[in-house]
Image (cartoon, rainbow over all chains, first blue to last red; front, side, top):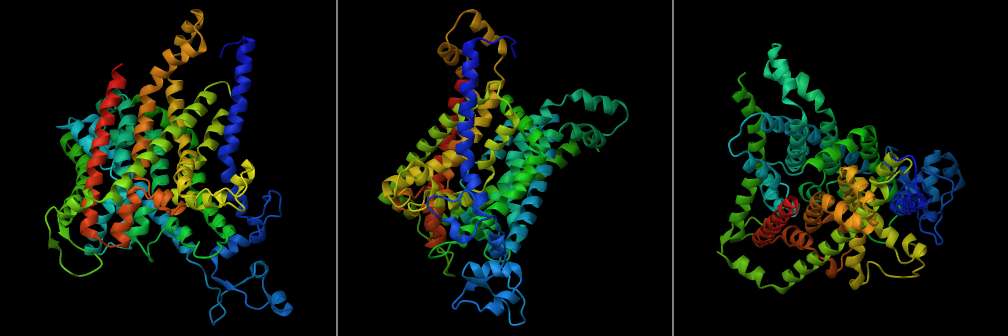
Amino acid sequence: MAGIRTRREVFFNRAAIAGVMVALFIMLVPIYWIASTAFKPRNLATTIPPTVLFTPEVSPFVKLFTKRSQLRDPVSQEIYDAAPWWEQMVFDGGQKVVRSNKGVVRRSGYGQRFVNSLIIAITSTFLAVSMGTLTAYGFSRFKVKGEDDWLFFILSTRMLPPVVVAIPMFLMYRLVGLHDTHVGLIILYTAFNLSFSVWLMKGFIDEIPREYEEAALVDGYTRMQAFFKIVLPEAMTGIAATAVFCFITAWNEYAFALIMTNRRAQTAPPFIPSQVGSGLPDWTVIAAGTFLFLLPVAIFTFLLRNHLLRGMSFGAIRK
Amino acid sequence: MSDLAIRNLFIIPTITFLIVFNIFPLLYSLGYSFTDFRASTNAPAKFVGLDNYKFLLNDEFIWRNFTITAKYVIISVSGQVIVGFGMAMLLNRDIPLKGLITTLLMLPMMLSMAVVGLFWKLLYDPSFGIINYGLGLGKFEWLADPDVALYAVALTDIWMWSPFVMLLSLAGLSAVPKHLYEAAEIDRAGSFYTFTRITLPLVAPILMIAIIFRTMEAFKTFDLAYILSSQPTTELIAIRLYKMAFLEWQTGQSSAFAYIVLIMVVAITNLYVKYLNKVKER
């Protein structure tokens, strides 16, 4: 940037920084609110004026993972003292943890749903990105008859509202027994992300000079070896960016998960809203579920952040 | 392996997969759209010809759903473009910690729309929501007032997806060659002139792509609106379609509805792509 700045420029720059700060504040307040509510005792979640400073608690997370029922009578001091610390927290919230008749703590469905989400999102991301990369390479390096038409067809599979596709998919899945299975959702999310993955990866692979592989071929590599040893490492930034986007989409998908699953394979997005139920929802539990649910995406994005920003602008500028 | 074999090995599985899971189901439901069929019963489908289509196209409630959706798309996409592009203009300067700020600003779009919808219910709550408290609105009803609810849903969508427009605009802005600005400075061009004659035309194609993506997504919106509000004034097409197909179990009729929506999506996309090509040519 220029070394000498006019007074006007300095003023504009300061104004821009102030503007960015305001935008950052507005965009992050809701997220801070989710994160902080996840650590509040229940009675502080819905106070006016809002509670900003408080002693953080893990009780929302205890409640998130356990089955609970309302306390009908106040707990006696003996039971309270005999209970482990985390159960005491639930007592304080006017509830008790449900145990089976063998004394085993009954768990809520959240843990299982979270694991389902992980299995389905990771597998479908892996499939979509690997198939997408191969196909993109095929389109980028070889002559394909009607290439533009095929690419448009691939993109068009993404244009449909999910609910439109959901009706026939639901009927088909019921017919072949894929309804409420992990495999069923994995296939759906892979199909969903594949078009995106092919398009994004094609942009990246087009950027890698063909001379790299040609040199490798001259050196006695086979096409396959050239692809795996030369092209793939070069395309890593693109693969990382694509993977982040596919993962975010699969992880957060709601409509298909709501329609295509009910118990065994249900993921977390339909599960969290179903906890609201009737009456006054416990926002601390919902916030805890949301907070935990955001973590994998946030971690994944953070790990790949450099690729992501570069990858995004790459693909965007060219097209 | 020959190049041809590798090409086929790389391409054919993807194409086959997409055909099986996209074209085939659509043909399947095309068949159902001409029948009177309920997936909740075992009664066989009865062929009724074009009756479903006739019924739907004459149903005023369906047209209301389309009007609501159009309104929603216009409000939320234009809001996202203004906010997103504005943020990108601010960020396209010497800002300290730019990378970190950009990453933080992207947090909203990483969340699940369903979960965002759920949580904004708390933020919008008339008695203890922080929005009313922060803005000093008292007991203002965001979601229970039928006239306001659609705007409230759009506002949440703007919050969530402005960062997407921002990211694409930022990429576009950083691609504008610096020498153009230097030339404008030498010519003593005003900042308004520089913006309308240099910045905007060069960013237009990429901004257009952002608008296309966001329009398509807003048109498809289901989860956010479905969870945030149950007002009839926020019943977008996707919600109506979901209710028809999976709550009322009108499988035949909803297949026909899905086809009407499909034709509209294809038509809108084509219009957009034509316009995009025009913008690019300039």
